[in-house]
Length: 185
Ligand SMILES: [Fe+2]
Ligand SMILES: [Fe+2]
Image 1 (cartoon, rainbow, N blue to C red):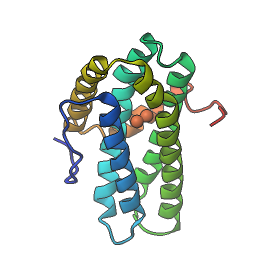
Image 2: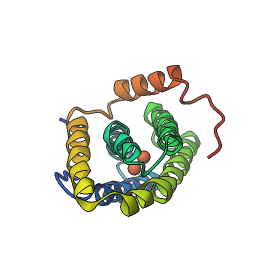
Image 3: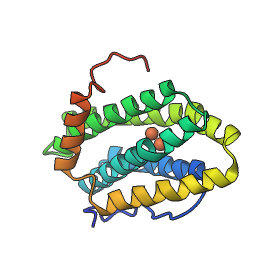
Image 4: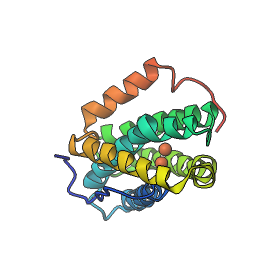
């Protein structure tokens, strides 16, 4: 089971675009809670870690490849999305590694995480979800929704946001060169 007591939802079916947008709203809510000094920030950062890792991995494993095969998006959009997920995971790790959930260092790490995630949500909605809506038939979006939700839920159940796992994911992204390119945003 996941180590977060915060409810991350457990969708089992739906249009993949809607399921992704539901998670994007969850990211925005969790980031706002993380900025709020009166929140249980440790619980919030763990919930955010589980959601970020699960959501991004389910997109990379199933959503991006399917949309690419359907010619809804190109290699560039998929690769750029993966690059931004890696940047998000690295900023997330910086937040998770801090001993104290208050003070200047924490604020700076949260500001960077907010900036990267908000940027990625915006870009993904504009350049990946829009073409998915307009060029993939509804039954295929529903089929992909079920696959996305199943993977996302299984990863959350496997406690994918735990510190050692986020460290391993960031180390792998570094090895793969996903973090060193000075790619334009
Ligand atoms: Fe997303
Ligand atoms: Fe994404």
